[in-house]
Image (cartoon, rainbow, N blue to C red; front, top):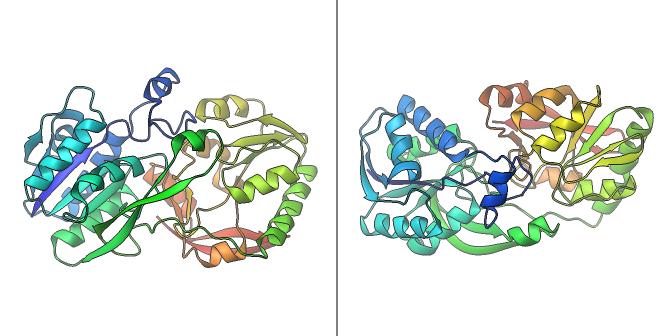
Length: 371
Protein backbone atom coordinates (compact mmCIF):
# COMPACT_ATOMS: atom_id res chain seq x y z
CA UNK A 1 0.00 0.00 0.00
CA UNK A 2 1.16 3.49 -0.84
CA UNK A 3 -0.25 5.98 1.68
CA UNK A 4 -0.09 9.76 1.38
CA UNK A 5 0.22 11.56 4.70
CA UNK A 6 -0.04 15.25 5.53
CA UNK A 7 -0.70 17.45 8.54
CA UNK A 8 -2.21 20.92 8.76
CA UNK A 9 0.08 22.22 11.57
CA UNK A 10 -2.28 25.02 12.65
CA UNK A 11 -5.48 22.94 12.75
CA UNK A 12 -7.27 23.23 16.09
CA UNK A 13 -5.12 26.03 17.49
CA UNK A 14 -8.08 28.40 17.81
CA UNK A 15 -10.10 26.03 19.98
CA UNK A 16 -8.81 26.46 23.53
CA UNK A 17 -8.54 30.22 23.14
CA UNK A 18 -12.19 30.45 22.14
CA UNK A 19 -11.82 31.53 18.51
CA UNK A 20 -13.98 28.64 17.23
CA UNK A 21 -11.54 28.00 14.40
CA UNK A 22 -8.15 29.08 13.09
CA UNK A 23 -8.92 30.13 9.52
CA UNK A 24 -7.78 33.73 9.04
CA UNK A 25 -7.10 34.34 12.75
CA UNK A 26 -3.84 32.48 13.34
CA UNK A 27 -1.96 35.59 14.53
CA UNK A 28 -4.77 36.40 16.97
CA UNK A 29 -4.76 32.81 18.24
CA UNK A 30 -1.01 32.95 18.86
CA UNK A 31 -1.37 36.28 20.70
CA UNK A 32 -3.94 34.61 22.95
CA UNK A 33 -1.46 31.85 23.77
CA UNK A 34 -2.63 29.13 21.35
CA UNK A 35 -0.34 26.13 20.97
CA UNK A 36 -0.17 23.64 18.07
CA UNK A 37 -2.15 20.43 18.65
CA UNK A 38 -2.15 18.65 15.28
CA UNK A 39 1.36 17.21 15.59
CA UNK A 40 0.53 15.48 18.88
CA UNK A 41 -2.71 14.02 17.50
CA UNK A 42 -0.95 12.75 14.37
CA UNK A 43 1.77 11.13 16.48
CA UNK A 44 -0.87 9.41 18.63
CA UNK A 45 -2.44 7.89 15.53
CA UNK A 46 0.89 6.76 14.12
CA UNK A 47 2.06 5.34 17.45
CA UNK A 48 -1.10 3.24 17.76
CA UNK A 49 -0.81 2.11 14.14
CA UNK A 50 2.76 1.00 14.79
CA UNK A 51 1.46 -1.26 17.58
CA UNK A 52 -1.36 -2.90 15.61
CA UNK A 53 0.07 -3.01 12.07
CA UNK A 54 3.70 -4.21 11.94
CA UNK A 55 3.84 -4.62 8.14
CA UNK A 56 5.72 -2.22 5.89
CA UNK A 57 3.86 0.83 4.56
CA UNK A 58 5.11 3.01 1.72
CA UNK A 59 4.55 6.53 3.07
CA UNK A 60 4.66 9.65 0.91
CA UNK A 61 4.56 12.85 2.92
CA UNK A 62 5.55 16.49 3.24
CA UNK A 63 8.59 18.12 4.77
CA UNK A 64 8.77 19.00 8.48
CA UNK A 65 5.62 19.81 10.42
CA UNK A 66 3.41 18.80 7.49
CA UNK A 67 4.17 15.10 8.02
CA UNK A 68 7.83 14.07 8.04
CA UNK A 69 8.43 15.00 11.67
CA UNK A 70 5.52 12.87 12.95
CA UNK A 71 6.44 9.85 10.82
CA UNK A 72 10.05 10.08 11.96
CA UNK A 73 8.92 10.29 15.60
CA UNK A 74 6.89 7.10 15.09
CA UNK A 75 9.89 5.36 13.45
CA UNK A 76 8.25 4.93 10.03
CA UNK A 77 10.26 5.08 6.81
CA UNK A 78 8.97 7.61 4.29
CA UNK A 79 9.65 9.62 1.15
CA UNK A 80 9.17 13.37 0.78
CA UNK A 81 6.61 14.21 -1.90
CA UNK A 82 6.28 17.93 -1.16
CA UNK A 83 8.86 20.27 0.33
CA UNK A 84 6.68 22.58 2.42
CA UNK A 85 7.74 26.00 3.66
CA UNK A 86 8.74 26.62 7.28
CA UNK A 87 5.30 28.14 7.83
CA UNK A 88 2.99 25.96 5.71
CA UNK A 89 -0.12 27.52 4.24
CA UNK A 90 -3.29 26.44 2.48
CA UNK A 91 -1.32 26.59 -0.78
CA UNK A 92 1.00 23.87 0.57
CA UNK A 93 -1.97 21.65 1.43
CA UNK A 94 -3.40 22.06 -2.07
CA UNK A 95 0.01 21.50 -3.69
CA UNK A 96 0.70 18.42 -1.56
CA UNK A 97 -2.71 16.94 -2.41
CA UNK A 98 -1.95 17.39 -6.12
CA UNK A 99 1.45 15.69 -5.78
CA UNK A 100 -0.06 12.77 -3.85
CA UNK A 101 -2.81 12.40 -6.44
CA UNK A 102 -0.22 12.34 -9.25
CA UNK A 103 1.81 9.79 -7.27
CA UNK A 104 -1.13 7.35 -7.41
CA UNK A 105 -1.38 6.78 -3.67
CA UNK A 106 -3.99 4.29 -2.48
CA UNK A 107 -5.19 6.56 0.34
CA UNK A 108 -4.50 10.02 1.75
CA UNK A 109 -4.40 10.25 5.54
CA UNK A 110 -4.45 13.80 6.87
CA UNK A 111 -4.57 15.51 10.24
CA UNK A 112 -6.74 18.62 10.44
CA UNK A 113 -10.35 19.76 10.43
CA UNK A 114 -13.12 20.40 7.94
CA UNK A 115 -11.14 23.13 6.16
CA UNK A 116 -8.24 20.72 5.54
CA UNK A 117 -10.64 18.03 4.33
CA UNK A 118 -12.28 20.52 2.00
CA UNK A 119 -8.92 21.65 0.55
CA UNK A 120 -7.71 18.10 -0.10
CA UNK A 121 -10.95 16.83 -1.63
CA UNK A 122 -11.15 19.91 -3.88
CA UNK A 123 -8.03 18.50 -5.56
CA UNK A 124 -8.39 14.71 -5.38
CA UNK A 125 -12.22 14.60 -5.61
CA UNK A 126 -13.23 10.91 -5.39
CA UNK A 127 -10.18 9.68 -7.32
CA UNK A 128 -8.35 8.87 -4.07
CA UNK A 129 -10.02 7.95 -0.76
CA UNK A 130 -9.20 10.13 2.24
CA UNK A 131 -9.15 9.51 6.00
CA UNK A 132 -8.91 12.26 8.61
CA UNK A 133 -7.26 12.33 12.03
CA UNK A 134 -9.50 14.75 13.99
CA UNK A 135 -7.59 17.88 15.00
CA UNK A 136 -9.76 20.82 13.98
CA UNK A 137 -12.05 22.95 16.12
CA UNK A 138 -15.10 21.85 14.14
CA UNK A 139 -15.42 18.57 12.28
CA UNK A 140 -18.75 17.89 10.60
CA UNK A 141 -17.44 15.89 7.64
CA UNK A 142 -17.75 12.13 7.51
CA UNK A 143 -14.09 11.35 6.72
CA UNK A 144 -12.80 11.63 10.29
CA UNK A 145 -12.05 8.84 12.67
CA UNK A 146 -13.68 9.16 16.08
CA UNK A 147 -10.26 9.76 17.69
CA UNK A 148 -6.58 9.40 16.69
CA UNK A 149 -6.50 5.82 18.03
CA UNK A 150 -9.73 4.89 16.27
CA UNK A 151 -8.38 6.42 13.05
CA UNK A 152 -5.39 4.07 13.34
CA UNK A 153 -7.80 1.14 13.65
CA UNK A 154 -9.68 2.25 10.53
CA UNK A 155 -6.39 2.51 8.65
CA UNK A 156 -5.36 -0.91 9.95
CA UNK A 157 -8.61 -2.40 8.63
CA UNK A 158 -8.10 -0.73 5.25
CA UNK A 159 -4.50 -1.92 4.97
CA UNK A 160 -5.56 -5.48 5.77
CA UNK A 161 -8.36 -5.37 3.22
CA UNK A 162 -11.03 -5.75 5.90
CA UNK A 163 -12.75 -2.39 5.33
CA UNK A 164 -14.28 -1.12 2.13
CA UNK A 165 -15.01 2.42 1.03
CA UNK A 166 -18.12 4.50 1.63
CA UNK A 167 -19.19 7.79 0.10
CA UNK A 168 -19.48 10.53 2.74
CA UNK A 169 -20.11 14.27 2.87
CA UNK A 170 -17.46 16.98 3.15
CA UNK A 171 -19.03 19.82 5.11
CA UNK A 172 -17.56 23.05 6.46
CA UNK A 173 -18.67 25.86 8.70
CA UNK A 174 -18.40 29.53 7.79
CA UNK A 175 -16.00 30.57 10.57
CA UNK A 176 -16.68 34.31 10.25
CA UNK A 177 -20.40 33.70 10.77
CA UNK A 178 -19.55 31.15 13.48
CA UNK A 179 -17.59 33.71 15.49
CA UNK A 180 -20.49 36.15 15.10
CA UNK A 181 -22.82 33.57 16.64
CA UNK A 182 -24.39 32.25 13.44
CA UNK A 183 -24.18 28.57 12.62
CA UNK A 184 -23.95 28.11 8.85
CA UNK A 185 -22.82 24.66 7.70
CA UNK A 186 -22.57 23.96 3.98
CA UNK A 187 -22.11 20.78 1.98
CA UNK A 188 -19.16 21.19 -0.40
CA UNK A 189 -18.17 17.79 -1.77
CA UNK A 190 -18.56 14.06 -1.39
CA UNK A 191 -15.56 11.81 -0.86
CA UNK A 192 -14.66 8.17 -0.44
CA UNK A 193 -13.31 6.98 2.88
CA UNK A 194 -12.55 3.65 4.59
CA UNK A 195 -15.66 3.13 6.67
CA UNK A 196 -16.65 1.20 9.76
CA UNK A 197 -19.65 2.78 11.48
CA UNK A 198 -18.36 2.50 15.05
CA UNK A 199 -14.97 4.01 14.18
CA UNK A 200 -15.80 6.78 11.68
CA UNK A 201 -18.07 9.69 12.49
CA UNK A 202 -21.12 10.43 10.38
CA UNK A 203 -21.79 13.89 9.00
CA UNK A 204 -23.69 16.04 11.47
CA UNK A 205 -27.43 15.53 11.28
CA UNK A 206 -29.66 18.54 11.73
CA UNK A 207 -32.42 17.32 14.05
CA UNK A 208 -35.58 19.22 14.85
CA UNK A 209 -39.02 17.94 15.80
CA UNK A 210 -42.24 19.85 16.37
CA UNK A 211 -42.34 18.74 20.01
CA UNK A 212 -38.74 19.70 20.71
CA UNK A 213 -39.63 23.22 21.88
CA UNK A 214 -41.85 21.81 24.62
CA UNK A 215 -39.15 19.36 25.68
CA UNK A 216 -36.55 22.15 25.77
CA UNK A 217 -38.87 24.14 28.02
CA UNK A 218 -39.16 21.17 30.39
CA UNK A 219 -35.39 20.76 30.51
CA UNK A 220 -35.04 24.52 31.00
CA UNK A 221 -37.45 24.48 33.93
CA UNK A 222 -35.40 21.74 35.55
CA UNK A 223 -32.15 23.70 35.04
CA UNK A 224 -33.83 26.81 36.49
CA UNK A 225 -34.64 24.84 39.62
CA UNK A 226 -31.06 23.61 39.95
CA UNK A 227 -29.67 27.12 39.58
CA UNK A 228 -32.13 28.36 42.22
CA UNK A 229 -31.33 25.51 44.61
CA UNK A 230 -27.56 26.09 44.39
CA UNK A 231 -27.09 29.87 44.19
CA UNK A 232 -23.41 29.68 45.13
CA UNK A 233 -22.59 27.23 42.34
CA UNK A 234 -21.09 28.24 39.02
CA UNK A 235 -23.12 26.86 36.11
CA UNK A 236 -21.47 26.63 32.70
CA UNK A 237 -23.65 26.31 29.60
CA UNK A 238 -22.00 24.83 26.53
CA UNK A 239 -22.69 25.56 22.85
CA UNK A 240 -25.69 24.53 20.81
CA UNK A 241 -29.31 25.38 20.15
CA UNK A 242 -30.70 23.50 23.14
CA UNK A 243 -28.48 25.36 25.59
CA UNK A 244 -29.06 28.67 23.86
CA UNK A 245 -32.78 28.08 24.46
CA UNK A 246 -32.14 27.25 28.13
CA UNK A 247 -29.84 30.25 28.55
CA UNK A 248 -32.59 32.52 27.26
CA UNK A 249 -34.98 30.98 29.78
CA UNK A 250 -32.45 31.78 32.51
CA UNK A 251 -32.36 35.40 31.35
CA UNK A 252 -28.73 35.49 30.24
CA UNK A 253 -27.20 36.59 26.94
CA UNK A 254 -26.30 33.09 25.78
CA UNK A 255 -23.91 32.73 22.87
CA UNK A 256 -24.98 30.01 20.44
CA UNK A 257 -21.47 28.68 19.93
CA UNK A 258 -19.63 29.63 23.12
CA UNK A 259 -19.28 28.69 26.79
CA UNK A 260 -21.22 31.02 29.11
CA UNK A 261 -21.44 31.14 32.90
CA UNK A 262 -24.12 31.96 35.47
CA UNK A 263 -23.97 32.24 39.27
CA UNK A 264 -26.29 33.82 41.87
CA UNK A 265 -28.82 34.15 39.06
CA UNK A 266 -26.52 36.49 37.11
CA UNK A 267 -24.34 36.03 34.05
CA UNK A 268 -20.70 36.04 35.16
CA UNK A 269 -19.01 34.96 31.93
CA UNK A 270 -19.67 35.11 28.20
CA UNK A 271 -18.02 33.18 25.37
CA UNK A 272 -15.21 32.04 27.68
CA UNK A 273 -11.98 30.50 26.43
CA UNK A 274 -9.82 28.06 28.39
CA UNK A 275 -7.90 30.80 30.22
CA UNK A 276 -11.11 32.65 31.11
CA UNK A 277 -12.69 29.49 32.49
CA UNK A 278 -9.72 28.63 34.67
CA UNK A 279 -9.58 32.17 36.08
CA UNK A 280 -13.30 32.08 36.84
CA UNK A 281 -12.90 28.76 38.69
CA UNK A 282 -10.75 30.47 41.34
CA UNK A 283 -13.91 32.13 42.70
CA UNK A 284 -16.07 29.01 43.03
CA UNK A 285 -15.88 25.70 44.87
CA UNK A 286 -18.91 24.14 43.18
CA UNK A 287 -18.86 24.06 39.37
CA UNK A 288 -21.48 22.46 37.13
CA UNK A 289 -21.12 21.97 33.37
CA UNK A 290 -24.16 21.45 31.14
CA UNK A 291 -23.62 20.14 27.61
CA UNK A 292 -25.67 18.79 24.72
CA UNK A 293 -24.30 16.23 22.23
CA UNK A 294 -23.86 16.91 18.53
CA UNK A 295 -26.78 15.23 16.81
CA UNK A 296 -25.99 11.98 14.95
CA UNK A 297 -22.24 12.15 15.78
CA UNK A 298 -22.83 12.08 19.53
CA UNK A 299 -19.79 14.11 20.55
CA UNK A 300 -20.21 15.70 23.98
CA UNK A 301 -16.61 16.91 24.22
CA UNK A 302 -13.99 17.42 21.53
CA UNK A 303 -16.02 19.00 18.74
CA UNK A 304 -16.77 22.72 18.80
CA UNK A 305 -15.95 23.13 22.50
CA UNK A 306 -12.16 22.77 22.74
CA UNK A 307 -12.17 25.54 25.35
CA UNK A 308 -13.18 22.70 27.65
CA UNK A 309 -9.64 21.32 27.77
CA UNK A 310 -8.59 18.30 29.87
CA UNK A 311 -7.38 20.72 32.58
CA UNK A 312 -10.78 22.43 32.65
CA UNK A 313 -12.70 19.14 32.70
CA UNK A 314 -10.57 17.68 35.49
CA UNK A 315 -11.27 20.73 37.65
CA UNK A 316 -15.00 20.29 37.06
CA UNK A 317 -15.08 16.52 37.54
CA UNK A 318 -17.18 13.88 35.80
CA UNK A 319 -19.92 13.91 38.43
CA UNK A 320 -20.52 17.62 37.80
CA UNK A 321 -21.13 17.23 34.06
CA UNK A 322 -24.77 17.12 32.96
CA UNK A 323 -25.73 16.10 29.42
CA UNK A 324 -29.12 17.27 28.13
CA UNK A 325 -30.92 16.37 24.92
CA UNK A 326 -34.39 16.17 23.45
CA UNK A 327 -35.56 12.55 23.01
CA UNK A 328 -35.83 13.03 19.22
CA UNK A 329 -32.20 14.10 18.99
CA UNK A 330 -31.01 11.34 21.30
CA UNK A 331 -32.92 8.73 19.33
CA UNK A 332 -30.89 9.61 16.24
CA UNK A 333 -27.63 9.65 18.19
CA UNK A 334 -26.53 6.02 18.58
CA UNK A 335 -23.97 6.71 21.31
CA UNK A 336 -22.21 9.51 23.19
CA UNK A 337 -18.53 10.19 22.51
CA UNK A 338 -15.75 11.97 24.42
CA UNK A 339 -12.59 13.10 22.61
CA UNK A 340 -10.78 15.44 25.00
CA UNK A 341 -7.33 14.60 23.63
CA UNK A 342 -6.52 12.83 26.91
CA UNK A 343 -7.11 9.05 26.65
CA UNK A 344 -7.15 8.53 30.41
CA UNK A 345 -9.71 11.29 30.88
CA UNK A 346 -11.84 9.90 28.04
CA UNK A 347 -11.94 6.55 29.84
CA UNK A 348 -12.90 8.22 33.11
CA UNK A 349 -15.73 10.10 31.42
CA UNK A 350 -16.97 6.95 29.70
CA UNK A 351 -17.14 5.24 33.10
CA UNK A 352 -18.95 1.92 32.77
CA UNK A 353 -20.04 2.63 29.24
CA UNK A 354 -23.17 4.65 30.01
CA UNK A 355 -23.92 8.30 30.74
CA UNK A 356 -27.14 9.72 32.15
CA UNK A 357 -28.84 12.22 29.81
CA UNK A 358 -31.58 14.61 30.95
CA UNK A 359 -34.41 14.35 28.39
CA UNK A 360 -37.20 16.25 30.21
CA UNK A 361 -38.28 17.69 33.55
CA UNK A 362 -36.47 15.49 36.13
CA UNK A 363 -36.47 12.74 33.53
CA UNK A 364 -33.27 11.00 32.49
CA UNK A 365 -32.19 8.17 30.24
CA UNK A 366 -28.97 6.18 30.09
CA UNK A 367 -27.08 6.56 26.81
CA UNK A 368 -24.30 4.28 25.63
CA UNK A 369 -20.80 5.80 25.55
CA UNK A 370 -18.00 5.00 23.13
CA UNK A 371 -14.45 6.40 23.06
